[in-house]
Figure (tube, rainbow, N blue to C red):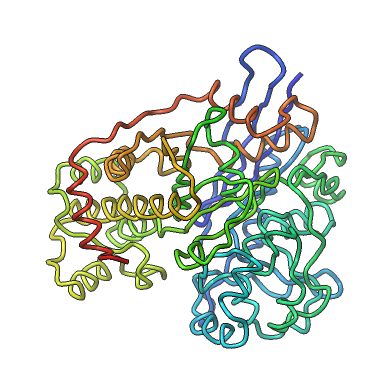
Length: 483
């Protein structure tokens, strides 16, 4: 029969509502998406604080759901770590603060004076990042007024249904979630001052959250009985569902967008001292899998360069960058100077000055620098992941928007010395609708079946490694030394 599904897919720079059609029971099957509404998303500075405009996101979500027409289900995924706080009446206590806000400056160091890194990693298995939810909460003012914390997709789902909860894949990014027990670590929460009861009940991907509230149904024109379904609500969790890996394939993935999430899919977390020292994270995946990965800064750096330049001709810039000299200038994409919004070309110049390099002289040279440096970071991360997890890989799947960047995909294949399979572009929305479809009875019993449907219905582009591995060895040594 098949199902029609609305996927609300929110990224750090844009959001969209996609209409998906899933037919898994006949022939080669069908899995396709149509974008019905796209909208801008980004930080809003109010005074000294950087916020998300959550009410605008909610409004645009409703517009998109109205344009989707009659659907069998709705699912929401978004970025991680950020949240909204509700008071005793269920009202939002202010716009959620953006993870790039400066309020967490120095907070991680302060928390680690009382809770050791070893204890945190043993419990949560998470990469130390200064904007993790635990540090945001430690910096929160007026936390005593809140009664419920909802991650961004859970907050939007609450406004659609009136039901509160915390989907597991996003909860696992907070550094308050026990990755082995698969539930909140209440002891850690108390020790940073989180009031009892603030963290809601955990729900799993595939669980029905509830039906639409009457006011929502009236505004969107949807049937009030339409279920809202918990998907892998961390967008990377949904993206990994749609990695088109064959059964038994030894694969790594790079979910490439504003951020790059680079890693492996495992059955169990890796909580060793080596994993902690390498700063790998163990985030929850759909069906109890572990996303063993590291965050790499991603295409954010190039996006900010384009914004500062006022340049929207990315294809032309990439053609020029492909012809620019190789390895002329290299940066560490994860240097803290590249985290906040601002004059990114100027920050690249400053990095070059600090590292004894001549700054790139043209926009094409800047783009080449950024993309080669990202490929080097991917190479280093995947080599570490294999060593620490004891898992070899034969192919790298690049999914998400960055899979369209042919130069970056080729550089990644060259750097890693492995074939790269690029696509699908809309991986997070595809993973979103696949989990919904299974919840509604489509014959997709496991991730293997879901991925087989993706492979059967989407064209992938293959990149074979080129060039000399010794050149990449030398380039990695320039940027990272022996770290």
